[in-house]
Length: 422
Image (cartoon, rainbow, N blue to C red; front, side):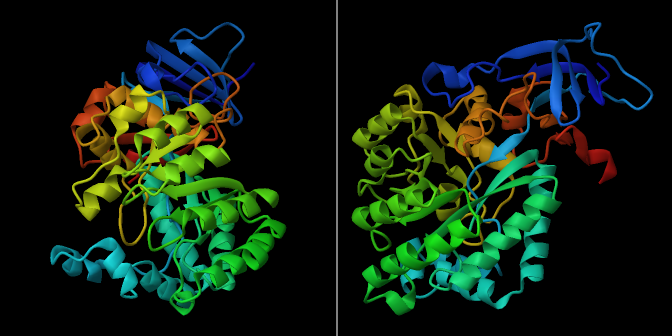
């Protein structure tokens, strides 16, 4: 069989081979390494993974692209499984407010935060939103991200803006090298016009917004911000159950600021992932582990908010709960597309080992999007999404933080980014 692409002279190949499922406990740190390796690709699929000598049935022809990794590190393509990719404007004006002690929920209550981004997003055309989000996707790709989740949630009560965000995300998925998986998050905040009638807004989400999104097939998931001052446990449950009725799989922003039972609700509903979890209770964490929920942690957000509180990654992993790591890229609480920096935060702040971190942004990130059988590891039959890092080992990528270690990104069997072309 002729290969379309061969990567040879790989110093360290981290395959993540093994069960096609999220990994917690000791398994999260078992990453499967091959030294002096090679990978062969045909079309968008991997056809060989192993030592440098290709088997006789894998051949090259004049059209085969042969890449010499020169002893560098190769990993699966990185998965950023929690972002707010499509939005208008930015919120650098809130920095001075934060420096003076204003809390996230205080800024939100004053009409800032999400409400500010809602106004900016509403005012922009689809093409303007597309160009802004495309620039962010280009940056993400340069850091090694090959699959990203993007949420709506900046239209809030305005369904046309919600649809506009999701339509832009679909266009990006069709036109950009990076795969974009869409999540409907109309339940991102209580709109100011519904401040005295939050139940009225919940009914609007359930009766109008979810059916419209589902009928137009604009999202795979439904998400809700379950927190004091936003959506209660009961409201979150009803929204997610309605989404499930319409074929939207449940995700949840849970216990980001304090424990109100969001983690327990994630376990009850069998959410694909529960995200943030800074205040999650012991009971909630253990129930999530039993229910197969992925804990999607966002250490860049905790770092940026400077609350001094962080998700308990070590406790979660030790209890067998699979942990994913994402940027939470958004214009307010975490304005960065640099997943490599967030990986370093996961190690330095959350005390995760480099091996656990890599699993978090590959196999566990894929599982947080229901894509663990397609991406997240380097195995025969899987999509050819790979990153060549300008490093000989994984530890250096985590240790030397704040820079871009990417040398080349292969997406669907094609070179999608090369440092030499920058």
